[in-house]
Amino acid sequence: MSKFLEIFQEDNGGLSAQRVAFFLWNTSLAAVWAYVSIKNGAMAAIDPGILAGMAIMQGAKVGQKLVEEKVLQPRVTEKKIEEKLVEGRGLNQEVIVTTTEEKSSILNPK
Image (cartoon, rainbow, N blue to C red; front, side, top):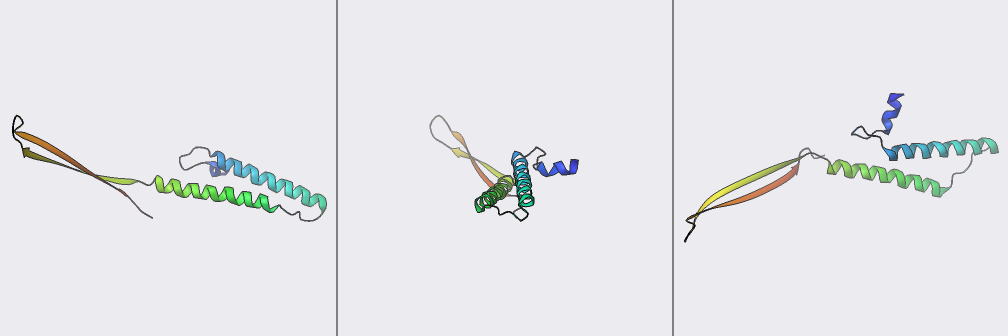
C-alpha cells in the first residue's frame, strides 16, 4: 500500500494535490464510462471535450515539472572580489576601491 501512495508524492516527499486530483478524476471517469457501457451493452463514447480537458491538464503538469526542474537545478556561483589601492589628493591620501564580479552557471546542464 505504501508503494501505491508514493505515486502521489512530489520529489520533496510531500503530497501532490494535483496528482491526487488527476487520479480521482481519471478513476471516476473510468468508473462512469464502464457503468454506462455495461448498462447499454456497448462501449460508450467519451465526449471529445472531456478528452481535451484531460490532455490539457496532463500537459500542464508536464510543463510545470519541466519548469521546476530547470529552476531548481543546482547552480555554481563564482564571486571575484578585487581591491585596489588608489592614491588620492587632499584629506584622503589613500582610498581602497572594491569591485565585485559575480557569475552564475548551471552545475549539470542536461
